[in-house]
Length: 143
Ligand SMILES: CC(C)(COP(=O)(O)OP(=O)(O)OC[C@H]1O[C@@H](n2cnc3c(N)ncnc32)[C@H](O)[C@@H]1OP(=O)(O)O)[C@@H](O)C(=O)NCCC(=O)NCCS
Image 1 (cartoon, rainbow, N blue to C red):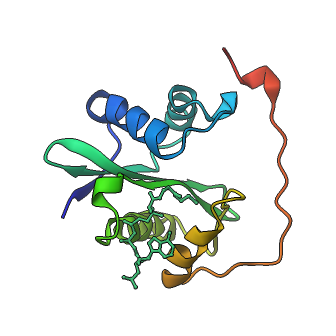
Image 2 (image 1 turned 60 degrees about the vertical axis):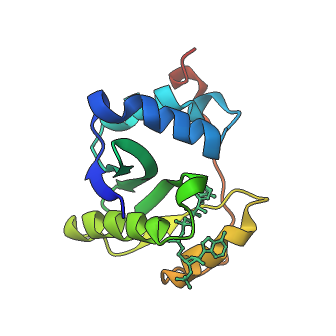
């Protein structure tokens, strides 16, 4: 089983970028992996990687704002899926948020990826009647 560590920019950067490109391939500029990493590291280090044989095979990012905790970027390399690693990554992020005093964790699932709700339901999450809204701050999305 891969081991889970806090992200280290020197060791993990290239592999995380490659994994996110493979797994998510978001078209939006504000989700560019390089930019997402830079902005996350400027705020906190709630970014975790699963490492197997020296390479990153999974990630999860957590966020905590004093009110809610959030999960982002839960990803497992296809070769490592269905072996419990996704669950271990989510539990690791949950433990970090719990240690910070977080009382509730939220996450979003992109339309079209609805089936992944089953993964989170096994981990105790429930679909809630909410409308998710967002606004991009274009002035902060460089390049
Ligand atoms: C979703 C993802 C992280 C799951 O990782 P994983 O390592 O395969 O998951 P696990 O092996 O830990 O699975 C835990 C449980 O969830 C179930 N599960 C996993 N993927 C599932 C899916 N897509 N739909 C329903 N159930 C799923 C597993 O069968 C397992 O159930 P069990 O405990 O009864 O055996 C992985 O499939 C992935 O990276 N997907 C692409 C990126 C993505 O969609 N991320 C989520 C963004 S919101």
